Amino acid sequence: MYKLPPLFVSFFLLPTFLTGELISALNKHKGPIISLKWNKKGDYLLSGSIDTTAVVWNVKFGESKQQFDFHSGPLLDVAWRNNDSFATSSADNMIYVCKVGENKPVKTFSGHQNEINAIKWDPSGSLLASCSDDTTVKIWSMKQDVYLHDFREHRKEIHTLKWSPSGAGTSNPNNQLLLASASFDSTVKLWDVELGRLLHSLNGHREPVYSIAFSPNGEYLASGSLDKCLNIWSVKEAKIVKTCNGDGCIFEVCWNKEGNKVAACFANKKVCVYDMRL
Image (cartoon, rainbow, N blue to C red):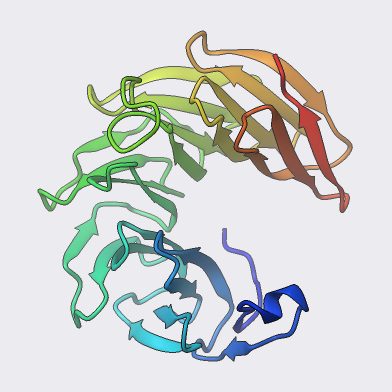
């Protein structure tokens, strides 16, 4: 389920960022790069490639800090846990947690039966969620080697997942931490991770759901689908409160920081911004 982006990473640094001058083309990978993430501090850039490796780049010097070669299949996602440790997922069904400066994984998670499309750390960095073509969502803890929860309610491949911006380490610490997953079965599911159960199944799309995003306050969830619809869901009531119909498949949705606008990108080459003041 991976895409085929370029073979190298390029980036711009101030002050040349203002003029658009290319400073560095980082040529360490030998295959298309699937995933790219900054750490929170902004001094390291992490990339994962079909060449089966992950690379941590030192942005200040425009060079490779360390290359990690543990997987036997293409990398499909990477996710920082903190400023110097991260997780990688692959078509080899494995997840590795690595740390800059270490030559071996600090944790290995095995349990999926098919390629792992996305991984996300919860806001506190203590739990890792993963979703796979094996139709399961799994929750992993750094305190144990086997999965903490194994959610099996989806009927088809699961493309992506997102944690709610709530609980410890967020601006909404008193709200319940939830996990949302989007599947080719046309549903979005909300999971109560603390109790390890399905909270709600959001049934409103007619085609695979490619992208989901929580509003900054965690009260709403946006979902974009191949059915050309953008749905806004009330998380508390588990129902659609607004629908925007487009004329192309939707591959990504995102909120602005104020939580009053949602952007969506379409297969028909358009980007649309919707007013979400409800």
